Image 1 (cartoon, rainbow, N blue to C red):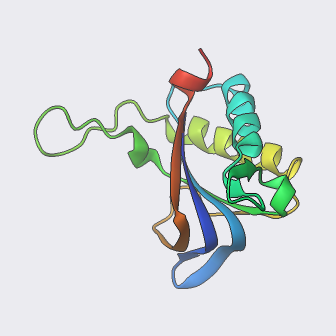
Image 2 (cartoon, rainbow, N blue to C red):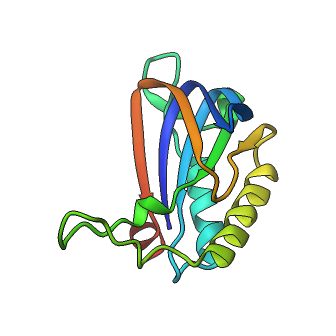
Length: 150
């Protein structure tokens, strides 16, 4: 599982020119799910996401987590995080989770985040989405379950 986390001043996702998810101050998270991922891996990744201290305190140090700043989440599924570009010029997505399994795990992640954070918005699994964001920093962090869950 991979999370690409961007600290944002604002972010929104649209599908067919309709805003389906929108947040202010918080994290916009792209979520890639592999066939080998499980709910247990998702739980560890969500806990790490929520506990990350990516917001500045009064001294300008990144010491505050999402809850400390009343931040929001915008969660967007993105199977392309598992693109394999080693051969040729057309990426292979063979490591990405099968759609039914990946969607179920994506919904599980959303539900887990809603238990921890008051405002959790989301994209539409499998849809053609347009994402707009104002990256705050810029500040981008990648969580990979192969590193987090060892």
